[in-house]
Amino acid sequence: MPDTILPPTLQPGQILARGVCRHLLSHDFVTVEELTPTRGLRVDVMALGPKDEIWVVECKSSRADFQSDSKWQGYLEWCDRFFWAVDEDFPTDLLPEETGLLIADGYDAEILRMPPETKLPAARRKVMIRKFARHAALRWHSARDPGVSLSSW
Image (cartoon, one colour):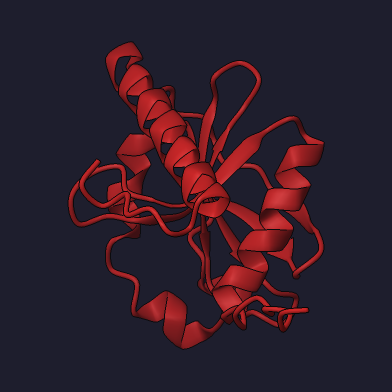
């Protein structure tokens, strides 16, 4: 019998993302991680709701992680709502009040602050839903058939 392959160790932000994704699923949102809405940006979690709502969640594991993030405002034009996900020990007073806030761990999350909704234009929503679908399908394919290179697709 071959040796069991253990999953790689998750980084702190990935642990938060796992809890966020679990929580959002309980609200009927499906999620993908590490989606690139446009060149130079990669969101930690993008969520698609039952009415085509698009939420972006950035996971921050420390003060330094948050303070080194200079791109987050670029995510605002790619979603209807923007959230931060942090653990219970994070100094939440650092986070802009006009953004959403989730407290998360590796198993779940809780929405503490709902941000205002800024509806995406219809054309951008269509583009993002297609990117979401393609990203999800490619991730599923690579999990199902890990020996196939998807980089050229």
